[in-house]
Amino acid sequence: MADFQSKIEKLVDRVIDNNRWRQRECINLIPSESTPSLLVKLCEISDPVGRYAEHRTMKGREIYFYQATDFIRDVEDELRKELQQYFGCANIELRPISGNMANEVVFKGIVKYLNREKPVSQPLRKMRAVINNDLNKGGHLSAQPMGALFNFVADNLETGKENVYHFPVLKDNPYKADTAKLAELIGVVKPELIIFGKSMFLYREPVKFVSEITSRMDPRPILMFDMAHVLGLYGDFQAPFSEGADIVTGSTHKTFFGPQRGVIAGNMAVGTGLEKLWVEIKSRAFPGSTSNHHLGTLLGLLMATYEMNQFKQDYQAQVIKNARAFARALNSRGIAVEGDAGEGFTETHQVLIRVRQYGLGEDIARRLEENNIITNYQALPDDDSFIASSGIRMGTQEMTRFGMKEADFEQLAGYLSECVKSNRPVKDEVKKLRQGFLTMQYCLPAEQSLSLAAKVLSSILPADPYIAKFADNLKSFS
Image (cartoon, rainbow, N blue to C red; front, side):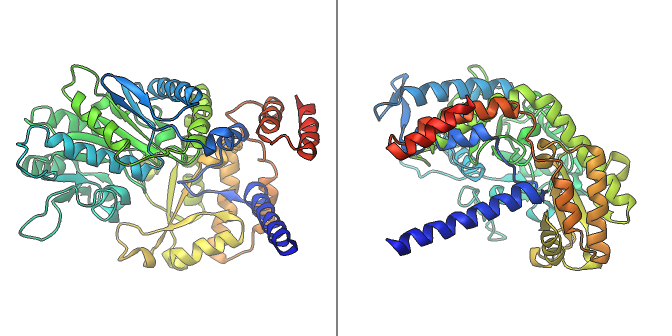
């Protein structure tokens, strides 16, 4: 028992140390991460975290296979409505537990949909051809044959590789699609699926352009946008459904305010001709890919979506303004910033810098981490491999939510550039800067959140006499 307690106490101490370091002393700039609000976190650990609520549509109605699921049924119904409002779309599938799974569910559903009229005696065929963003040009891993697209695309008998083609890019700006060459490629390849979206993401994707040129094709390719990195910027950055996209997928924890899970949104209402595709996507979500779909984070996502629908306009605008200010400030200090200076370097939350003259990206990222600036190294389009990366990838979303504005990112740019260029220690200055940004914005004010959090936490705790006393003390916040 003594050894058991000792291990627990040591782990708790390590947890506390890490919490304090990341949440009170670091400037967090990884573009694929964020910190959920206190109430979202408490929803995540509430009673549903240990429960099941499997369900599927059977004979025109939704059948739940577990009891005591009325609360979760209501949560799912409400969350679908909130996300339909956020995206301005007809369909929402909530059960994927990651963005990668959301993509895989869609790919499975498309294959089933494409085979909807095949004779029973024939095997399922794969997608004949797909166009996506090249992994080496910033494309999502999950949209590649080595990722979630694995085994869903037909092979090219001449090359021995999958029939996956990449968006052509501009010679002078590899972060933008060359639309003239793209139109030619679509005409030659005649893809059945076109996937927009990146993990190294500076500019809008040419959704409207592609939608217009493919509208005349028969059959028309399905247009899918993996918005994992920019899901929380839907609207201010880009609104793919209004430009002709059929499907949007994404992670709910990068620029979006939620816990770690995935979502599929669709515009496949009756009359679109794609109603059967949505039926296949739903069936691939359950039972095709999930059983327990992590009900704690599902509840947390509802709370996060309330926050996003309330604050998205101000939050999204500030994230992008901060990214542009950060990029300009870094550039003015002699750091090579990727993207077009004439267009503000970026249209998203991301800022990419080239640091090869000072060392490998991996080494520079470690140096920044040692100075409490958390980034991640990134292979740029002209790099030979990820392990020989020349870039650093950063995002402004998390620190924007903690209240940083343009002038604060300009101050940070000074510390970061000195650390990168001359290896000057800036840890103490970074810690001091962070002290001004400890209170989360774009959610309920702290005094209201704490009162509600105390009520939730006291309801979570078991009715042990010792814990009950602690719970009573918590209620004093209310």
